Structure formats: structure tokens, C-alpha cells
Length: 52
Image (cartoon, rainbow, N blue to C red):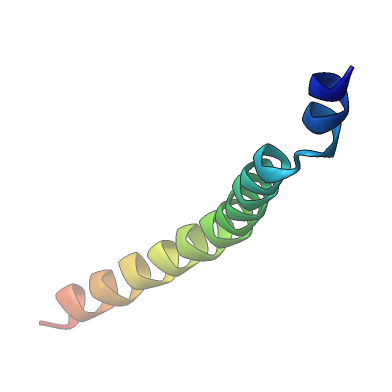
């Protein structure tokens, strides 16, 4: 019985899962920003290339 109680009180695995979810959320937020930035850079470099 003590083993079950100790297992239920152990939260170390939950912390790792929370960090994983936070990292996933940050990645999901960053990907569209980088994609949009890449599109703007491509347009800028195309304009410069045409001007040269």
C-alpha cells in the first residue's frame, strides 16, 4: 500500500511532461514567425537582385 501512495505523490515525471508541452508551445508559436520572415527576406533579396 505504501508503494502505491508513494507513486501517486511522485510528481517528477509530470514536471518533465510540462516542460515538453511548454517547448512544443514555443515551437508552434515560432514556426509561423520564421516562415513569414523567410518570405519577406526572399522578396527583399529578389528586389535587390533585380536592381543590380
